[in-house]
Image (cartoon, helix red, strand yellow):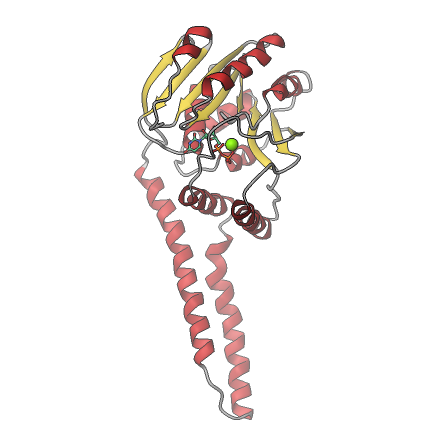
Length: 297
Ligand code: UDP
Ligand code: MG
């Protein structure tokens, strides 16, 4: 059985979208359960019709908005299927691809099937610019190109149980599913238009996700002070020699530059310290308020 995991935050068209997902799975004769994780929606989102219509659906209500990454974890932890497919609630990830993903897992034996974007879809200019910087930073710091990766993924039985064993509360879904390893294959899809409503990310949420992702993928920024100090040591040495053999020069620009580098380094250390602080608290990634539905485990 496949567990289809759908995080949902204030998605008004969720019932129609779920029906579409269920129809595709039924048409292809795939045994499935659908798990919707309502990530603390503050609008009155109704699931009554879908609960009546679909036999194998479960809705996990989180106690507040924990963010998409935590909602996905809630789904993975509660999935009863022997593999899980994670997808967005707005149908930007085409459900028609699920049967193909499933057959790559079942017949070809791949443990993870990654949905990758063949185009980046319609995005506003500001979002495209900032996400461009984010992906370039990841590429420079880690050498990994994750620009076209998405959360639309099938996770097989083995990686699923490995992911469930991970206990950290700061996580980036794509990073943990990359980190576990196992055999994997990519399939490409065209990003669809959102079926309704607007993107659920606020600039603040996106910024914090980007910081999380970068600091999880790499600890390179922590070494910037060390690298800078070596460069500065040599600069100081050469400028000292230069000062001896030439006339006096002003140090003001150099002082400003030095201060900004020092502050940047302190800032980077603070980000990692905050992550460590969150981990030692050992709080759960999410809190479940209520579970409704016929497929109740
Ligand atoms: N989402 C969520 N919690 C949040 C933000 C988003 O569960 O705090 C869900 C949202 O309902 C959708 C998915 O994550 O199913 C992707 O969100 P969205 O479509 O807004 O992101 P975009 O496609 O614009 O990147
Ligand atoms: Mg979307």
